[in-house]
Image (tube, rainbow, N blue to C red; front, side, top):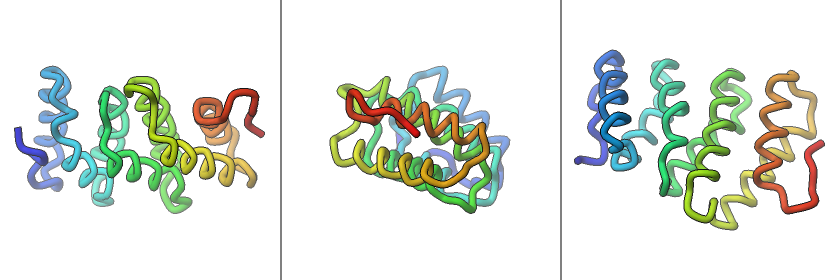
Length: 144
């Protein structure tokens, strides 16, 4: 399967159908470059949210995919629901991945969670950050 089968993202109904097909067949991991493109695409919130909901099932996420999810989490200009989905996706990727994230990525995620938690956040986003921090923090450390 090609790395980006999603085609024209403005035709979002077709892309959502393809998500279903790839999810059922277990082939979503083969399309990580396409998922990165969807996460970067700001023209359709439905596609971004659907990608964030589904990528947690990927067992060996590429660094570029993880980085894009982290970028969504850290972006104050993106609405909170998407950022919460990004946090949940990161937790799932860590749990489903073999051995978690590489140390450098884990440290980056922890620093972003700490930075975001150091300023007042809405309670629902603060709770998501606390859950994420609990996954990436060294043993014995706790979130704010």
